[in-house]
Image 1 (cartoon, helix red, strand yellow):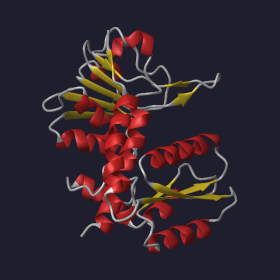
Image 2 (image 1 turned 180 degrees about the vertical axis):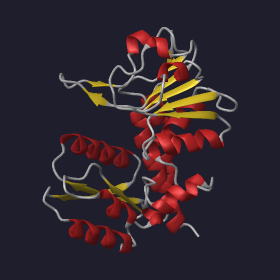
Image 3 (image 1 turned 90 degrees about the vertical axis):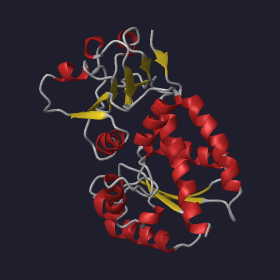
Image 4 (image 1 turned 60 degrees about the vertical axis):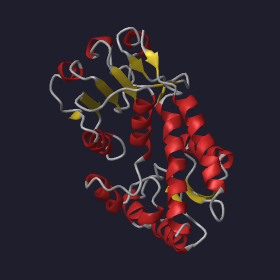
Length: 280
């Protein structure tokens, strides 16, 4: 039976470390959150981030904008936040309302305040192995693997999903840790044959039930990054949890696995951004 990777417990321990470090700065770190529209999931995510920040002594300034906000108005707000010396980090909550292109918004962020690591300069530094910030979800995956003593060096790591949010940066981080990475996607042929070779299998496809027991190498670590909301409102991942649990060596629950770690790693990035700005 697989060991459950308890992201909620590990995130709680990380937050206990972040609080005193934030308190030691010349002033509390400040995170500006930009939330446009009324997407229910985004509202929930932002409230969770606000609570996490409050627990760690990080101040939040949430800018709630109507769904009809224009591209120019968003860009103007980002520019104002870039210029605000009291703001250490900026987070633009995605997805943006229909009709808005997120790329110019994210590219307009001051790279030193880009705590989600979306700006091209920060993604380029990551690719060079010289990251300013680590992307939050990939960093959370690595922290879970490390906390449970799951080795990466020399291991075969398969990732399902090649998004610029999770799959691609995670592949870079695992490669930097000497893992051998196979990046899979919707056009990958014979996906189960590849995943059965993986010592570490990460799924970030957003397809409930995608990862079945016959796709998992016995004893492998299965990291389920996806959060899918079913018709009944319940959250599930990509893995068929009851079927995969007896086969895998380690398995993340959904919720309670990678999600809390993503938020904890965001807090670490805000702390780092503040430290870079406030500590000579």
